[in-house]
Length: 590
Figure 1 (spheres, rainbow, N blue to C red):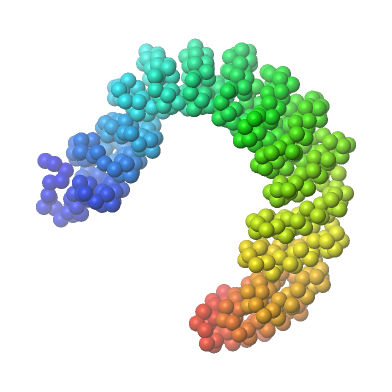
Figure 2 (spheres, one colour; figure 1 turned 180 degrees about the vertical axis):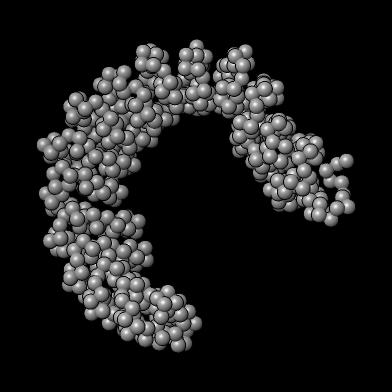
């Protein structure tokens, strides 16, 4: 009896339709049916699912990759639908087929599902069913099956007998020496994971030879994956073994001829430092690191520069200040004039993080010249990143000393042609206000903040209304009354309706930082005026503002001040205005 046989049971008719869809020429219908496989399996029951549906899927589906991808994912969750752990092995055959297809994402999903169902097998079932499948994959003619096999060793190894463990080790070592680079790459990617499930005493004998082979592989795509594997080995071995076996491998990778490998080393630098730090001479590691900072390839310098602050923090405390001042800063000074803008940008983001590590005196003599040079860089992102690290300078020497140097850079960024640069400096203003003090802010920076309220880019106007609340919380409601509300009164009368709307947005945020008395005296008169505006967009935004401002007022004030305005808007000729007025009334319970 085939799966697609018609059944007289009406309740199974939809299932028959789904099964027919599995054979349909339309990919969308086949996808739909595959996504509902669990429904089909539930309706068929565990026995028919095992004997018919799984067999059908194994035999007849050679499909589009997107269908196979969904199938591979579905089968990983099929254990209860085939009768639980005792029968889970019946899922191995379709997943084995999927693990050998050409499309990488399908193979990866099939391996993920196989790893998931491996946990559901008993140890005896693993040896009887899963291990033979793994052997077939590992010795398959096509590289696709051998790459898939690499991802399965770590889930099988801990739960099988010593004899099979020995076979698995031998198989994995063979895959590490495979003729096809793709297989060696897959083995290198899974080497560290496999080592973690080994008995600690067996790691060196079992897998170290594979690591040493792979880290000198002719393909850089293989070598770069051994960086992570070597780190994993380092976490498993004792100190003498680590020094003898892992340090030489990682040191060679630091100087690899391929920039991609060196880039991976730079990416994993902190993990390498944590693994080798105690056993390796600090000066030797610093020398290797500074070589990466001077690397001819921009991407490598970028990745290495990103980790400057964290690397310095992890140095031994007794040698830290000396190493930073004599070795790291010497290279940092060269990077300030690097031809690659991204490198300078990364440097600007981390360099001042060294200030707390070297103290006030060295910060003034060594770091400030670098800071000033970056502050005057031609690239907006560099200037932005260096200003963003102002809080770190403030911790050590106080930012007030830098205020005169900072101002030209801040003004330049505030007027930059790229709106994203302007947006970043807008968002940074509250921090600058707290670091540089109210007097300096009012005199030099407040005019910039007020100008942003009329910027031609909405995101800038929106961000500047949000920072007004933070500034008011910092400097007080009276400060807002004196400095911000006069600008609101100008915007309220502006001929451009967008500026009148900005006025409302700003009043919304200000109301959350001011007292009820100030709201009634300073904010409500402006909102009342805009309720009468000629433009419906302004009127319905006034309704929204009343809802938000009303949350900061008492019930009596709401009834006397806000309710009449909302009632008036509720009778407006424009549908949207009436809608938002009603919404505001409901939100405030009026």
